[in-house]
Length: 283
Image (tube, rainbow, N blue to C red):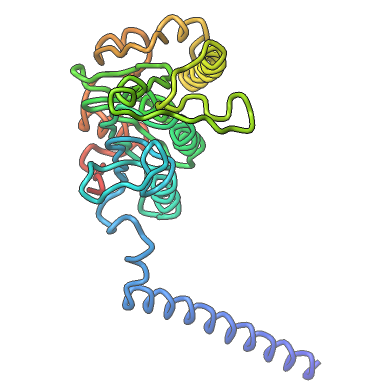
């Protein structure tokens, strides 16, 4: 019996030592992360704010440093938004225990459809409640990504919608002729250089482009209908490419309510069951 009792005591002491060591290691790790500034580098909140603000400003582009044609942006040009940076911010917000929600502040007339869809899906599947606030403009691709949010708030004076796809461009053939320039087509396939602004668009080429436009348009309508819980028929009637004031967008159920950032604060307070004063935006 003495041997068993001694063994139990030794085991209990060993367990106690291990527990103390683990707790001490965690405490040291937390202290070191705070002291070294590591926490500040990975946390998106400073500890006093709990709603992360993600701005969508200017053109929505495929990746940082590229415009809609894939060329490089000059640093002096207006700000843009891209899915990589936006989703990285969203992931950081989701992993920060201080963050309770995300406010997407939109001032954009759109951009590339794929980038817009990627961002919309990121918001749609986020573990945090996401609110889209359309301030000045939320049209085309910018409206598409807004539909991924849990709710959409728009200013009554905002410009909303413009559901549609455009591939319009400026043709240079007359200018080139006046300047003595001639386009020489050297392509291995019939449609390889279609859409080139330095050549006239043929009948077959126009049909090809209009075929693609129809497919993309119908998919845009489907995305909006699904995300806004509307019928395809409802959205199709509104998808003539035109935009509308926030008040009309509200009447047509393209947005959930009219208001501003304080409206978003009230929404978060109700959703999170906290007071208005406890809703603090990370700005």
